[in-house]
Image (cartoon, rainbow, N blue to C red; front, side, top):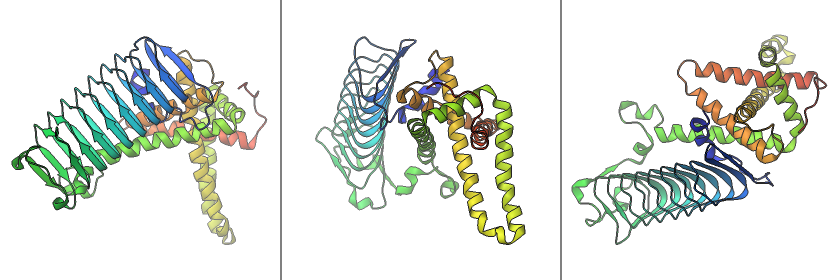
Length: 376
């Protein structure tokens, strides 16, 4: 189950504004690293999951690598796919599969045997791509061959001497005259210009009504990042309080969920009652704000508790450090996001997570002395 879930954690597994320690966990041949400055070294591993401020992989990854941080550097071969996110992402070793990267400054300096997907402010490609390439950026430098098709969204592109595209070139821009594709790169009959909005929209008549895949993907990953960061922040500021909430959720999930439903119902229902009193209208905004805060806090607590449970099932002890709590926070956020993708039933499961977390918050506020304060 972890193999299906953890790839989505790389966006900010432990964005270590708060992490002072380094978590290095090896499980099933895979490596899980989190901390301020982390480096994979030593023997080859199966899959790699690493996050931090400065993240480097200098050992071979036989499977796929998932790396996130401010500075992400790949200096060892990856046998399958590479996923990276950061302010600066540098690919300095060959990748046998696909490369998917996003950030501010992206550099691909070694061959990619599969497809390339790069979205950033500045994108530089200096090594060949055996498959298709999808590149979006404010400035793009293509100085290598692309054996498949190229989808390019940028207002500023430069073509190096070695730049060639064997397939079709699709350029997405609102000013076609500003983008020139030399004949040596691709013949004119293989170059097609599209409106910039088409790059981020679905084809068809509904493209103006429904967001495109990239928009939905960014929103989905952004949700994981936001929930995970909130959980990490809560864990860093109030670890004992969060541990108490987590203990309540895991010990009494059904009863806690009912209390969460009751608490949210009371806040929402109070809006109607306050409106009926007339003078209470001035208090309505505070009731609505309280409902929103309870909802957000409930989901963060619920996903964090879920993350603790999953990591415990995987063999990890209860979180003791900020790095461990960050791992639980982002694990739970990713699992919650994945559950939400399940047709028909996903939203019910997400609602359950949300209500259980809200119930723990309600209990903590109304009865702060419940239970035994867990050790952290």
